[in-house]
Amino acid sequence: MEMAPASSAVSIQKFRELLGVFCATAYLASSVLGCTAAPGADPIGNSNQTAWTLGFCSALFVVATVALYLLRARKGRWAVVLSLVLFAIHPAWTVSAWIGDCGHAKVEYSKWFTGALALLTIYQGIRLILARRRVEGF
Image (cartoon, rainbow, N blue to C red; front, side, top):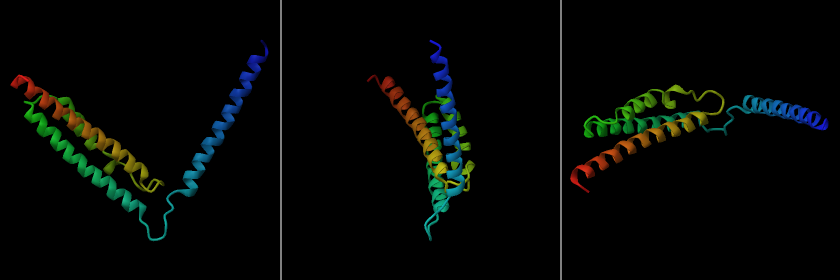
């Protein structure tokens, strides 16, 4: 029974060493490689353009969410407030593309935010359809 604590301590030590190596490798890979592009390519500009396009789509989703809120007789205010907050902190204008990854994080976060705004719009639309069906007696 005395062997268990010793092997446990050894495995914890190995885990710490592996974690340290992993962290050092991740840090060095991001700082050494950074944003290396092929000659003539503009990955940061492309990332910014993609993120801004997603930001524009997000604006359309916010407008649609507000319009559906008004059509629903001002029901679902939480969806409108959440949409406005997500739009205000959207990565298209709050995340920099100059952080070393050529803007890939900016684009990925923008996709998530735009997807969340699309889901809120879909929610408002479904609630409007269900309310109208209930009124019409379907």
